[in-house]
Length: 377
Ligand SMILES: Cc1cc2nc3c(=O)[nH]c(=O)nc-3n(C[C@H](O)[C@H](O)[C@H](O)COP(=O)(O)OP(=O)(O)OC[C@H]3O[C@@H](n4cnc5c(N)ncnc54)[C@H](O)[C@@H]3O)c2cc1C
Image 1 (cartoon, rainbow, N blue to C red):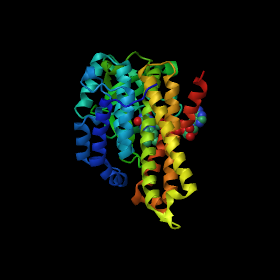
Image 2 (image 1 turned 135 degrees about the vertical axis):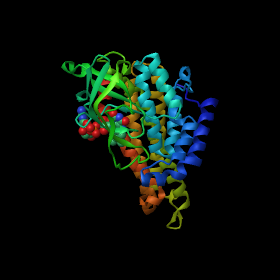
Image 3 (image 1 turned 30 degrees about the horizontal axis):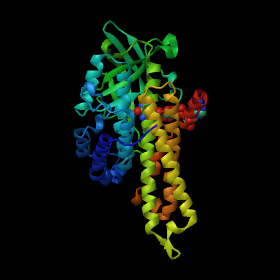
Image 4 (image 1 turned 90 degrees about the horizontal axis):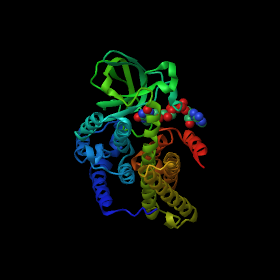
């Protein structure tokens, strides 16, 4: 496969790099400390289209393929993985609408994102994490639509989203085959944001509970048929996981670059750290692993674009491998930077805290290994 970066892709990468250098990286440490994103940064991200990267051309967006999206999420994550996650969550919410929604739903959802709106994908519940099929949020049919009740937790963009794709069971007696997806407007009565998580990393990305208490939605809010929710959620995650990989590569590349700069400057025992063979080994391993992860992400994204049958297995590989690489590379970067790496001031320990969640969300890496083992032929 040829992964030569095309001129149009390079232009977009340069645009994102400029936003990262001028607007995101200078604010990253403060956003990490405060757990808040300044309004002026949201405005930049919305005006540059970065919050709506995945909107297809037919609905007024840039129509980017998954390979190009992966290139851009990697760039964003170099500046701040929390910001990259918040923007990627808009795509995560959009995907089920694009895969299973009606024309009207696609138009409306995309329009809102293009206007600077935010979105969320609400599958996980307190009692249903890795076992997502065990969700108990209910959707009871009425004459005009459905009444939703339940609690979702750990929802990225939960406090910010104006549209939330909620997975609820419309046919309890059918178990997981009753799971159904709905587009829920956050302004509806009965919709509220519960506990906002105080997290270890990706602190610029807001994560919260979503509470549904007798929340009435119209029948037109249902995505596809009753009972199609679980396959829709799985198809969505298959398409999205390469981008968790891409964000992980961005974190790992940033760690590598910071470590490299440091070992070329820092002197001990009368010479630069980079001259020490044990330091060279750490740097060389980081460089090899980052490159291998990047290629696996491109491969998974290309297979997703081509709608290949085994794309989901590659997506699991890319997500799992790249996030493991990000975890290792960030801890190794701290190691070669010594006390300076351990200091908050360096920003490198933030990279390690940010990397950790990449091994957990969109299916933990244990779950990904299960998908790979069961899916490889
Ligand atoms: C910051 C953050 C943002 C998130 N954003 C979203 C979001 O936007 N939308 C959403 O729906 N969810 C979101 N999640 C939820 C996330 O997808 C779940 O946390 C994840 O799937 C794991 O579920 P759990 O936390 O309940 O862990 P559990 O399922 O309780 O797992 C705990 C441990 O057991 C292991 N384990 C579980 N099952 C198996 C198995 N079968 N084999 C081997 N090991 C296993 C896991 O790997 C893990 O190590 C987010 C989570 C976090 C932390």
